Image (tube, rainbow, N blue to C red):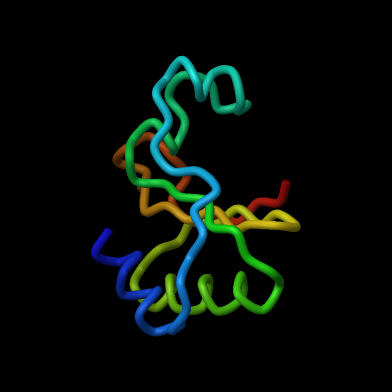
Length: 95
């Protein structure tokens, strides 16, 4: 939340959350990551955004050390999970 609030402050506009924490059962139903995907950690968020806002969020997030991004047409996923937590630490994927 600290990093997310800093990104929002710098970008200077409110964020609309598309998805944040998901319980393992729900994540298993809606995501290919199953019961232990990034959203089940409480450290992942999907933010509704157009192309320009996705760029600004990613730019500021990288400055804060966030290295995991999912890019979709209507949102951006960011999380700060690492190899130590069992996730690839430096990745960008598309939906």
